[in-house]
Image (cartoon, rainbow over all chains, first blue to last red; front, side, top):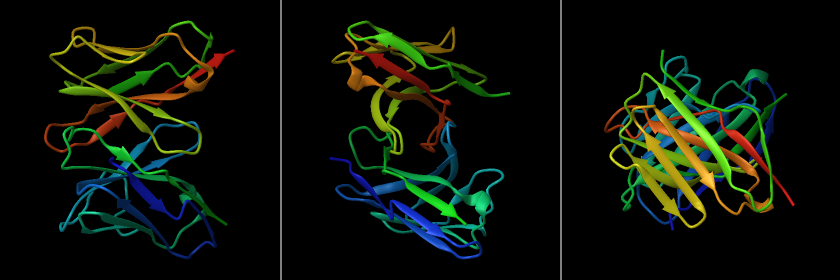
Length: 117
Length: 113
């Protein structure tokens, strides 16, 4: 149980385009979803926290107008990187926590690798 | 300032030995600490959670200790196997009731046959 999927697994796009990444909890209701970014050989950096039906809370230094997060249902959150630039190239990972016995645990998706040319 | 630190140098051990990884933190008072495993190009996978009032937690070949006085957690893998080779991340709760986790930079473990 507690499976989280992400789509796409990798994407290559041209500078200036927008990219949408989907995060789904497949077998549980995710009351909270988190979006992280990870650069090579570095740790996960939390970008934002989203709760179903409310606006996302962004971490300091993360531009909310550039990284649009929508958490429309208890099983789906999306991250849209708007007007992507090469410096946005990174590994984006979502996680979800919810109505499970161990609510403090986050269940991670497999990640989406974004390359902006 | 707040910091969570893991040994950034890779840990190389021989198969069958016990691997011990360290996680130290400063200026946090976490209610719990978690350990995750991350393989290259994949998302982290939850391994163990230990609460502030617990000294030790075990799961199969894994053992975690939590010393809130030293502000340190140790993660042990006994009878290590090459399949245990991965990066191990510690994470602690950033603040109560938000569910936010702060991750260390991870320690890469390499188990040689």
